Structures are given as structure tokens and as C-alpha cells.
Image (cartoon, rainbow, N blue to C red; front, side, top):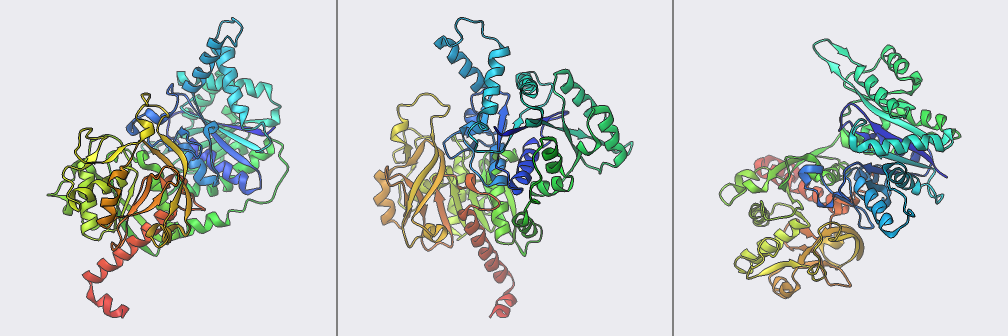
Length: 549
């Protein structure tokens, strides 16, 4: 059986449990250990698929079609491995399983209770990934903060596992906060002491404390924390604020978090962690040779986590291009024909983001038109591609009021329509076209130039698709549908030849972008933005052109 590390949080949310878990897993993986991470979320929704992005940030989708917490995106980006349905479990899924068993009579007439039935199901799920000899270490992040009512069953399950498993097979890492009071010019350890005390009252004793802090922790502070929280001094880890989340694994390596974990879990010493590729990536990220400005046209831009995977994909693609990518958020609700030139002035590229519902749709269509007519590199993802189809239909094919039936069920020209298999579905959760599907790419197209192959697989999350009744009209008007699903003929990729860079995809390439394998579409989009920036610079300063000649 694998060894298990549980990562909990105290004092406040948003301290970065997912990043710490991913960083520790990265270090252990770099030492040759087989690692995976799972997230246990305390909310009662079965999954985040029906949650508004303003509520919970983006919904990450795995290869096998699970709608999961956005932290699984961090796990994949750091470890360069795929996660699955088993890597994200919610209170809702736990209770759903237990209630279904009760209805089937599986508990033989016993009274179903939180202890043992709910906690037994939690423990079963916690241990599941470690039973097939696929992993050496399974890290489990417990969502929420210790003390939250909804988190109590998860904490109780960890307490039971600490008792049931051999001591060296179970480890608890507790992430907490050491606030710095500017008025007193002091770091305060009391919130951490109270957090650990609350953990202890619930029967769970942290083995390692990772302390988020704005100021360095000196030895005296670490000693004080260790003394009052009943851990060794070397088990008090400083987690100072970093300029990028990708610096955290190196910071944790300097603090020897991986070494301490291996020692406590009786894992034999291994080779030193090989993070050479990671350091190369960071060097390119920190010291770019150029800069581009990308406009992100979305409707949830007030919350950064709503487009988390897209923003991280820009970081990966920027590093490969040795280019700093500055993302400018533009709310689609406030774009119109009158102000679009002003709103998008100075951009080197335009990405129209995914989304649902009619709000802000017309602004997205106006932005697409501006990019097409002004040779501005354009990249549309899911709804972004659909907006490009609608814009082209209205303005180039003369299909007046062409629209998607998602926004206008009575449109005269439904160029985007509900997928046939979706028409009989009533339930909302987990019923979209989800997960990885194959796509066949035509040779001689921009998509083929980007991917370098005719066969790809990308992840999806949608109900609506391009209406193939209009396919011939679009092709005759100049649109190239360069990627199709071989089985369903569903349009996966559309592009406009003759434009510097104009491509829309029905899938979500950002979901597979990692530090080691950036998404090809993002890499080529940033490269196109660099070329656009060079052209703009030449126009502004004709002397540059003569120098180049």
C-alpha cells in the first residue's frame, strides 16, 4: 500500500493548500517516487459543474470527463500527469453513495450515521488510489479550513486513519498563517497556535506545519511555534510569498519539506530531486526577451480564478516564447460597436473565453469582428469559437440575426445548435459532452501547422455545436473547418485563411497545458502576437524597418 500525506488548512482560506500539496508532490516525484494528489471538498454539490464561476472559480475537466475543482489543474500542471474522477471527492458525492447504499439495503437495517458510515466512505475514497500499487505516495488535500462545520467528517476520517494505519504510512501537513502586524512590526504566532489547538481538539495532530508569511521566520519564532504546537523545530516550514506559484517547489526544497516528509514516513533516501527543466522554465519566465499584450474577452473577469487554466496556459506559452504575456481583462458586457476600437486599442492578440448564457454575448461578437477586420491575432475557445461562427455568418454570409439556440431558441439561422444527443437531457449536472475526444486535422491548415499531426485528443465541456446544415455555405465563403470528430462530423476547429492568425476551437486546450508540455495552440498564438507586436512597432517607428533591412 502507498503512503498517505494529508494537507489541511487553518486560520483562513486561500492560503494555497493546493500549491503546497502540488509542490511537495513535485519534489517527491523529482526524487523518483510515484505520486498523485486528490482533493476532498466539503461542499454538498456532487461536483462543481453546476456552480457559477463567481462562486467557485473555473470548473476543471479531466480526461475521463469528471467536472472537478480547479486545484486538480494545479496538480496536473505541476506533476505533468492526468487526474481522474477518483482525484476529486465532495461531501455531496459521499452522501449520495451512502444514501444509495441505504436504499439498496446494504447496511442490513442499521441506523445510518455520520460515524461510522459517512466516515467509512470517506476513508474508502481516501485510500482508493493507493491500493493498486500504482503510486508510492498519495497526497490528499482537505478543502476548507479546520473548524468549518462541513469539514468535520473529513477531519474525523483523517483522525481514524492516523490511528488505523502504521505510523510511518500516515502524515499530516497543516498549512497555517503567521500574520505580520505592521503597526507592531511583529510576526504573530497566536493564530497558528489556535489553529493547531483546534486540530488537536478534533483528535488530529499535525506532523509538519507550513507557515505562510510575508516576512522571514527566524529561528526563535520557529522554535516558539514548535514548542507550543508540539512539533519538532525542523518540522516548522517557512512558506514566504512568491512572485509566481512556480517558485514554490524550489522554496519548499530549500526548506527541505520533502526530506522531512520522507524521514517521518521512513522512506529510504533517494536521489536528489532533478528540477533542471523546472529551473529552465523559471529562468525564461523571469527573464523574458519580449512582451505582448493579450486581451481576454470574458464575462467573469472580476474573479481571476474563473479563467485560471487559461491564465496559466499563457504563462507556459510565454515562457516557451521567452516572452512576457500581459493579460488585459475586457468585460464583454461593456463592448459595443462604438467603443470597441478604444477598448481593444494596443492589443497584440485577442482571446475570447468560454462561458454560458446570453449575458455579454453581443460584446464578444463585436470583439471578434474587430479582430477579423483589423488582422489582430484571434483565438476563440468553446463559446469563443461559436461567437466567431456567428460573427462570420452575420457579416460575411448575410445570415441576418444568425445566432446560437442557447441564446435565441427561435433564431432564423441557428448556426450554433444543441447537440442531438443533448436534446433529451433534462438534468444539468454532469450531462454535457465532457472529457477527451479525438479530432482529425486536415493537412495544409493552420491547425496542422500548430499540432504537426492529423490526429489529436483534447478535452471538452459543451452542449452546443456548429450546425452542419450551414457547413457548405461557410466553406464557400472562405472558412476552413480544419478539425472534425471522425465519428460525429462535429466541427472541432475553424479558421480563416489569409488572416495572420484566426482560429477557434470547440474544445478546451488550456486544460492540458502544463509546465513541461505547454498547449500548442497557446504557444503559436503568443508567437503570432509577437509578430503582430513587431509589425506595430515597425509602423510606429519606420527607422526600425530600415535597420531590419
